[in-house]
Image (cartoon, rainbow, N blue to C red; front, side, top):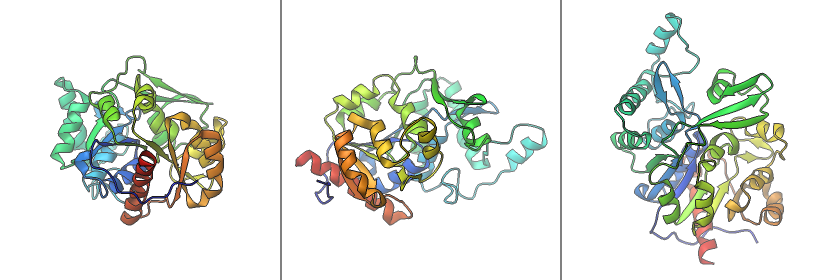
Length: 326
């Protein structure tokens, strides 16, 4: 049967969200309307991180932080609302690289992060300092403090993630992925502990290859998820055979997967107890249950506004609670 939301949520251990960029940030906006923010832990991808002009930039960490702080640019879903780009224009005038858009207020975050990292602070410690300064009560943790970079194999050769995603606008066909630094990467302090203590774990509606796989690939993460007794859900970023945002559908196709919510569910397999499908994909629910062995929640997954974000978060968490209690 399809799980229906309705049971109340227990107040206990944290709700853990495995997060990528914009989709995850929007989902977290809904979660903090349902669960006290201090009871939420966001474990965030750092495979997108890069160095720009000598500065350490963490796009996914910043998108999640700016969104939860109420500072994100609502038109793009990333960057700072109302930001200016005088420094970027001056850099371009000097002949420097200007393809990666860094606003002036955004630049302050990267200056602070780089300075603290150079002083010897860990990325997780610096992230905690930034979130605290911006009034974010959610615990935002990079999945690892070590350098981890997503490399994209294309017909034109291997590209760094941001070269593929920003500079070349995701136009290259993806033939494979490599996570540089993975052998040395270890889960940041608090990540595994949060997963083991969690009352619910949700894989956000992020790109499963570019945003979630760099998180799951870190040593110990998959085993910890399988060990955790918390009910686990994943929300499909594919609706009606198309990506809600970004190149997820194109990558599913180029890597030989079914371009559908079912194709995404198969990727997560035994990691999840519940798969969240949009109403437009309700016909796939039986196949998910049969092939993946997960229950299904069929609901509205397009987060077009604050009410929709909250409704998706509530429905997902209440369905997980129903699995645990029922």
